[in-house]
Length: 404
Length: 100
Image 1 (tube, rainbow over the protein chains, first blue to last red):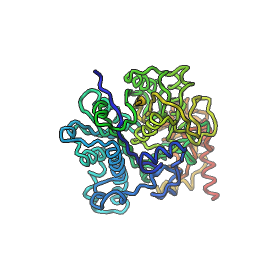
Image 2 (image 1 turned 90 degrees about the vertical axis):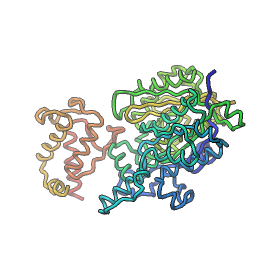
Image 3 (image 1 turned 45 degrees about the vertical axis):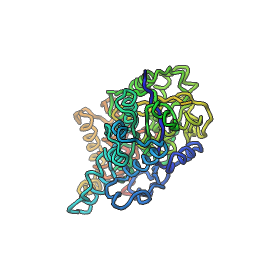
């Protein structure tokens, strides 16, 4: 008897606002969370835009003592985790705490802490750093804080695979539950990376847009960085049903692959293999998929390669697919990208609303897909994929089914 | 850096050409003699990351800011199709800077 895995709660912080309900509304309305960077001195950058979670202030959610332990990324993870746990109604007893995993993606770790520390040390010549610098910046801090906050004592770890971190994390959490290693997991991703140091590093790669994120558009000219967190409660289905939990969707497949080719250039073969692996793991035929939440970074190379991979895997069915890149709205949240995009995918599955690719202003023959341009569309979605293809050539795709 | 910037102010056209060729050669693991003004990135097996590193070296050496977008090099306001085009672009950037 195969164990099945369902999503019973989610919480999210992003440039689209705080909370699942706000995120669903913004995704439905095609709101753009990208704007002028305000938290840093962007005049030193060649681009001045980003997707800041501008409504998120740690002081609104934590005491001063708590804040001294928490990088902004961990703050976002905890706020999203609180929402996910409260919404799911999952309140594990002592035995269940031992059977609940925590698996959280983060590409970079506590970059605000690192940036502040380096500025003080090298820029200001300070003799000492804040004593909690190490626990604040370690990439596993969000996973550890979530485990501590909810007393979750099963296997817990952080996953780091750049832009695919949270898809790899959620895929591992899904497999742990399906295999019987645990019965539930708190999983997702968190990333707060909009510091001058990090953005300068992105600037160096010369793949940043100065004027907006336009995935799959002929006019696209690069990515826009974002920040945020999305955390989910994954549970074994019978357990969730027994306690009468709200079920947002079923996770059915996870596929991962490595390009083994280039450290930054995307690779169609690696993308195809990850998509096919997710379909196979989920027992899905390509023609059962209605929606693909694309990686869609709005770089020339990613979007062209991803479109080619989708055409190769889906063949004639590619024309029937609804595709979108919600990065056009919440920016590229790097280690949290797949998690925030799973919120969009679960909206499509649970509400029958395909979130749009906004800022779409000119078709690109090399990306000939129905990318749901500019406006959300109502469509009953039976099954969906969410793609993440990372720098380093590490790919991770999740397959989900509607729960009805 | 200060020293390099001081040098940049006095670079002659010959210096610029020699420096650009030196930078391209060092990033493409070719001898300077093998790099000519007609060489293309393809001739020298320079990939997109190599180009980004070369642009960075040019910016640091000449204290200029090169308008180059790796997403779509052909629409950038800086021609990288040959070494000669890069040399011409650098000369123009330096001249603009002196005029400013």
